[in-house]
Length: 94
Image (cartoon, rainbow, N blue to C red; front, side, top):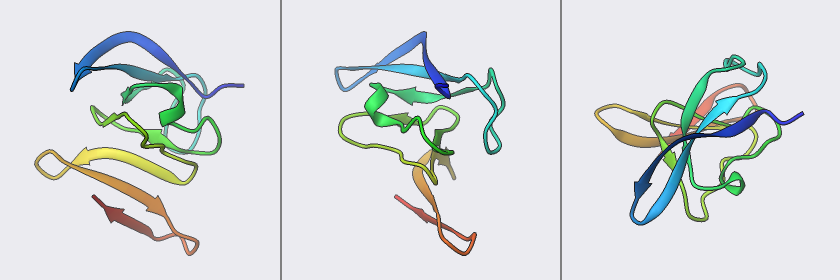
């Protein structure tokens, strides 16, 4: 079963059309029906594992969020990427 779908809500960024995502099932801390951030295409977000784009974060171009990674906007609008490490800690990076 797919874990998310692209909604009709969209916006443009640098000439690219980005679509809001919506969860189709519960996983990690994401609940079925919850809205996520924006992606340009399904290749930007893995449908496996617990990868997710949060809030109003935008993922486009060749960037791909994979299982174990989370993408969101925090701290005065800075875009961060969060990767889960083997020991349960997280690495935050831009």
